[in-house]
Length: 260
Image (cartoon, rainbow, N blue to C red; front, side, top):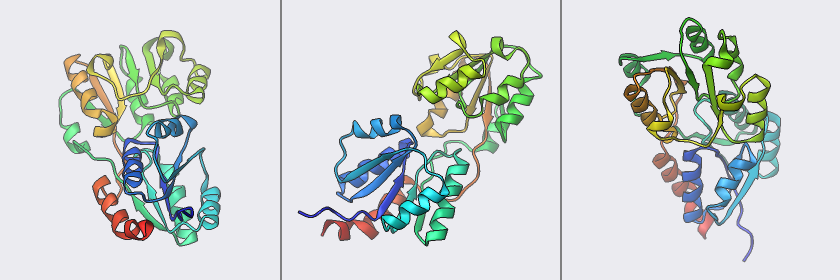
């Protein structure tokens, strides 16, 4: 039996990406799945997916364009993190340059930023920088769960090494960057989420509006239970399709042809 032609490229690394990869494997639709890290790749490999080639490593715009051209990709499914704005921009630009089809898979939202802002003990900000600026005017312990890439903004908070506790992914890059910025010992927590309510307690709890897949509801409940102020980085507004809609599109356009 000859190797199936892969005309789809899925950018994963999220819960939605994993769900789509599992769906493609179940439908025996051959494709490439790209994750930013070896850790993300290992999580997918645990599922033992068939007809899937998993790639690890971040690609810039030029590298994406080269891959699309060399592999003759017909369509790209972007299921990257809602806050990975630069990554999505690179994918979109690469698709436009190569005239490759593009679909954005959006994470399900439980509560809008407007609804959150109206709740007691919840403050919504447009960026980590704005949230850190506000926290500089407060007192008390701060639990940070917005990732290692923007930890530098929190170092502007007075006495941050005593006040702040950073929770990051258990990857070498995340750990090294956190330590470099001064987050060490009990002030650095390296674990994979989402987490239970008991894990999410502090005077101020900083998180991104990560949706259901990111355990946002549990974080909101934990903050209320602990009477902590939930600092929320609002999700960027964008257009796209749900996981179910993307699955329907893929099966309608690629399923039958790939299975022949």
